[in-house]
Amino acid sequence: MTREDAVSLIRAGVGTTGSTWADLGAGRGVFAHALSELLGPAGAVIAVDRDARALGRIATPPASGAAIRTYHADFIRPLELPDLDGILLANSLHFVLRQERVLKRLVSYLKPQGQVLVVEYDNEHRSPWNPYPSPFKRFRQLAGTVGLRDVQELNRRPLLFGGREQHVAGCPQTLGR
Image 1 (spheres, rainbow, N blue to C red):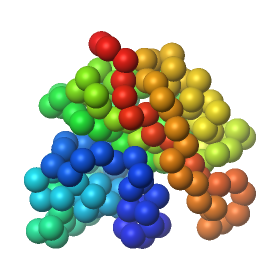
Image 2: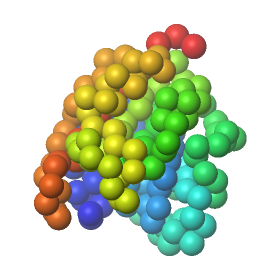
Image 3: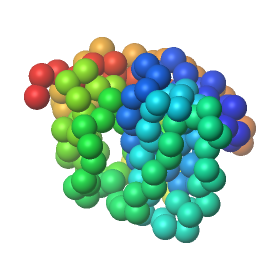
C-alpha cells in the first residue's frame, strides 16, 4: 500500500489538524506518514511497534506534515503515552488475542472526545495473516463493550491479492470515562 492509498483510506476518520495520534502496530510507517500528512505540521504522530527494525525504517516526514516520534513497545501491554486525540490500529487488531481487554486499555489513553480508527480485513476466517479476525460487524460489537459509540464504516477497499475487502471503522467519540 502506498502512502497515498493510506491517506485516501483514512482521511474521513481523522479529525482536526494539529492533533496528537498514535499509530499502534505502525510497522514501517505507511499509515504513520498518512496521519502526518492529514494532521499537518502542528500535529504529532506516535508510531508504536514491537519491531525496532521496522520503526527504524520510518522516514522523516516532510515539513508540511506532523512530526513522527517512534516508540518501541508492544501495544498490547501498558504504554506511557500522552492524552491522545486519536488512535489508529491499521491491520494490527487482528493480531491481538484479547481484543476487548487491549482495546479497553487503549481507550483509556484518549481525551474525552478522542477518536479510534481501525483498518481491518472484512473477513471472518482465521489465517496466519489474520489470526483473530475483526470484520466490521464484530468490531462494532467489540467497540460497544469498551465504551466506544457511534461506530461507523467510513471506507472500504478491495484487497489487491483477492478475497474480502478492507474496511475502515471510525468511532468519533468515546463515552465518559
